[in-house]
Image: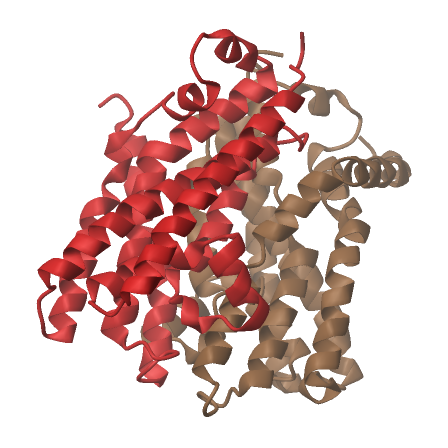
Length: 267
Length: 243
């Protein structure tokens, strides 16, 4: 499969993915409603900060933090692990393998093509956030916004690649959905999804520094809420992309080994 | 014992989820002494109730939900509907997995620990009213579940309804007084999460007023009747699949 041919297929793949997202809009709505946890956590933390700011966070800081979290999660979401599990079990992964485009590329296109639909959800939330907290809580530095774009891409790649790793595991052990459960539980604790990591117990902070999760949510959110200066942001970005590289390596390793074992039952 | 590795992994995931419930609580109470009028021990009680209900959900409710969603997708719900018994009864007793309810013990441990923190023992009246509220909470959980299944008749892809259900239920791990305004209204009257964890916890602490107690019992009954009506309506809409 040549690069040129893959590139030529991309627009069509995006179109198919987009139409799928439109066709299953009810499912998208269910998914959006399922990811309202930042809003619940927002209620919790603002209740804590009602009387006095907590650890440098006032109520409006929390509002900015959690609405940014919501936006970042909407835009960097991936769900390939479930899809791969389903396709391995049903044997339909064989169809994907027959196409002259690498399966990873078609998964990626499907995921990214849902972005316009997700923007419809995330856009208004971002506007509400701006109106509620004013522009003071959000960074004005254009350099940081450029870093933010790279960080969002990196965050999505980490989510996507971790999904692929777990999806590839399904080639070895038939069903790896349980692993996705463990990954998600860790993600909730260590990504900053439940609250700013800076406010968490010291042990959690130490562990989080060595895990990829905070680069999925916490890092882009910190960039948006002006919690990082330029040098720090660049160091974090470098670390994030080290994780991306590691996960890409792991994915291709598992994929090559797993494909040899794939037997396409059902079909 | 055939699926030992599944059992271990399941147990690990459950343990992780309990931890995800506790870490924010620890983080919050490291920084403040009282959360919307609740002390650490009292808020822990609410988490205990959340864990208890989650165990009931895992062991008695979710297995059947998964089964019925599968029925709808494959079109085999027809066979259930043809049986000469009430369909709601049949689908909700399809499957029980009591071994997934291990978290009942975690919940009891949390209750014991929070009473230890508060430095007193539960009163008999508190326990009795908490028990009544446990029954109504289970009824509410079940009604919410029936509503979710009813939604399965309308939504095309239904696989992730359990996930949706879990994430709504998740909000009930916090005392309801945390929520203000519109959220508080929703969680008390529309999705009665407050009745499921906060009120029972208050009852156990002996802090629940009799009027709230009776209103919530009545409210739970009303909610169950409503859920039943909506179920009957949506089952009428059901038009089999793949046949």
